[in-house]
Amino acid sequence: MEIEKFIKDSLSESADVKRKTIEFCKDEIRQAAELLIETFGGGNKLLLCGNGGSAADAQHIAAEFMIRLSHDLNRPAIPAIALTTDSSNLTAGGNDIGYENVFARNVSGLGNRGDVLIAISTSGNSENVIKAVKAAGENGMKTIGLLGGSGGKLKDLVNIAIVVPSGSAQRIQETHITVGHILCEITERKLYGENDA
Image 1 (cartoon, rainbow, N blue to C red):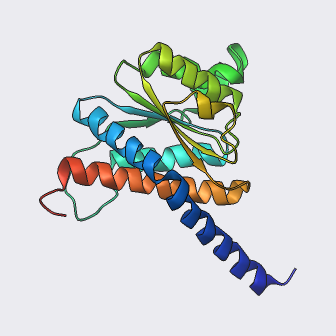
Image 2: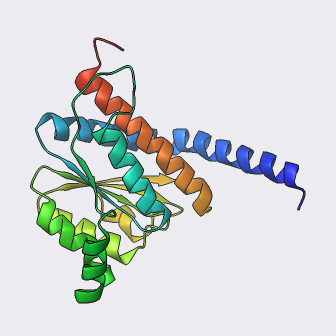
Image 3: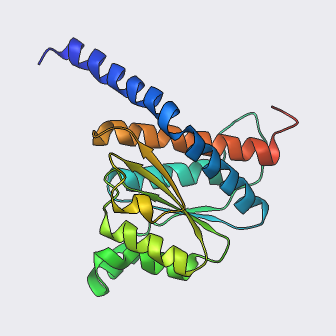
């Protein structure tokens, strides 16, 4: 492997996936932003879940909403909770009710009608994320999928499926964070920054 070529090819591939995401996902990203604006404007909250790198993405996106993304805005916190951060909760759930149920259990306990769940899965087939989406539906919540490849099983289970057009987990995850930033920035500017933008 020639390192300089690998770096160039990786960055070029990442840029290409983002360009394809504009073509294939812009309508779904807009719909997701509109849903989040409506959700937060109505006093409801956002839950997020995912595994591995997608767990880190859930935490990253939740932090942007809670703290702020655009530093030129002085805004209140926007309520967002990553269901991936409590080690006692996750290990008790994994031990007592099975790891496939840990996110669904938290959605059932924390989610309310009118809230939104962002379900993050590069394959769209993570069983614990699928069960979380089903639990969200039972709670009267709306769901957004940050997915990749074909979208997997989650594509047809969520209300809005943002399916990154790539088969590479690395490129999908990179694009999920970009989409998360876009959703957060649109939301905070529409709710709190129209006079400043």
